[in-house]
Length: 440
Image (cartoon, rainbow, N blue to C red; front, top):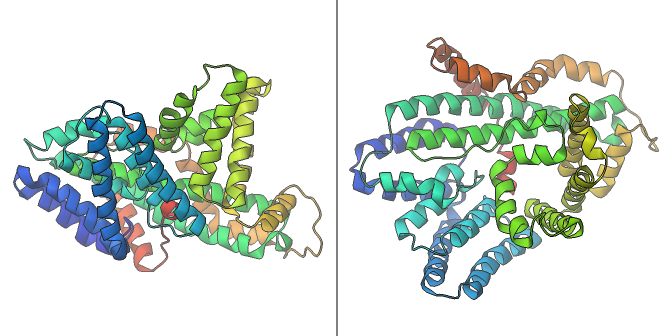
């Protein structure tokens, strides 16, 4: 199931929130668990038994680890089992919905809970809470624990939480369905035409389009997950912090997919020694982290090129004069946008040959048998200019600042209602796409 489906919007979500509000408090955790299982079943019903078995097995790992003094061996077995299963799925190309996010969430839960006995119901909520189950954000047990403790004494659903959640959910749904999904049509048209059928300007337009589409899709999802957390009384952390205003690749990845970056920092980078064991060791640690990042996204060669490019740029920013450029206003911003747009092209195009040709087209390197159609740029801009402009605006801090300033104003309600109805219209027209990160 997806947040951007009619059945979810008008059946699953309302009934779920009402149930959380009206049932006795002692049953709230059961509902939180059942909601996750049902949500997953409505998306991949044949894998629900495997999901539940995984939760039970990993709870067994947790109890084993929490009972023994020497935790190293059981931790290695538990983490190795989950990581190994993820790698096997990646290699075979069989990717159950949200397996990458679920696996990292489970590993986090096992490591964080090594010194305490997490109750079985808390463990299940952490693993199965549906707003974060298939695409994150990744939540730490210490972040969820206060709400889990609270759920034993009072209702999680409040009127103020539902009201604020509906506003944020509408904003995220609008970004996803209206902007991202329609820009996906433009990117697909350019990508299908291929490097031989487009001009350099159109190649850059396609790259910028994908840059906006990916952000609107994933940021929209993250906003909806945060909103669902507010509606159901669970603290889902922010996953983006205006990444496109960054001036360096390092800063960008501290602002983009924050919970994943934090996961890599806390469970891989810092245990390896981080930056505290000299420059050479720091470079090795960064290379390991970015190699795993690339593999986490997929086994295609493009993901390794993508992660290798970003790793190299971060190293250069840390140890060469390039780092001084990133501290200069405007110049740093231009540099960041330039390299990130190129990196997203690498991320998007799986075929090495097609990727090579597309990059050659972007940099005006002649291609054999190229025959681009005329007036492409004019046609595309005439059709999609308002979506591109809207996407650019949402990529700035401006909308967030406006929302914080006017969020309590009553005149916002009609605006959000129009945004919601417009999104529903596109969904009912069958123009919506699955979330882009569902495949990871």
